Image (cartoon, rainbow, N blue to C red; front, side, top):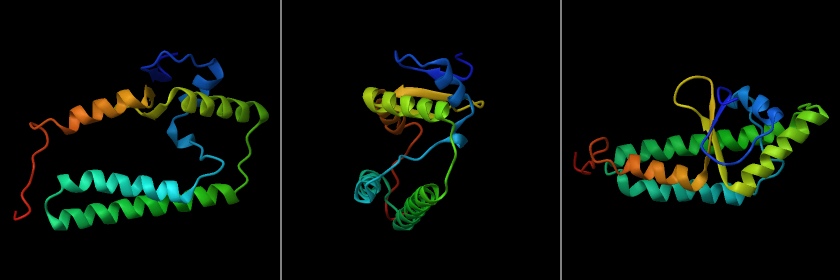
Length: 148
């Protein structure tokens, strides 16, 4: 079942969970409730972390605008999903709840693979470490002076 989803964890998924994930992330679901202040804080934290790496003011403004659009889209889609009565069978609802529980219990991230129509499951800590290595690679990312 690795073709449906690639797992970089020791977490065991049921066949139903793998089948649901094999539909891809376009079939994602929103949490039943969110704290808007937590979402705002997460976006502000991301902006704060990235800001030191963007030296051109024009690029900083573009990034801020992009981040604000992402935030607005997320909130809009979340509230739209709450107003719309998406129907899930009892079985699908149980599978979703099971996946949500595993994501929370094991601190997992589920993302689209770089290639193909698969998803990748990783421990959040491992994902963050891998992203830091990529972003710290001076051969791929160059610091740009603000005067440029």
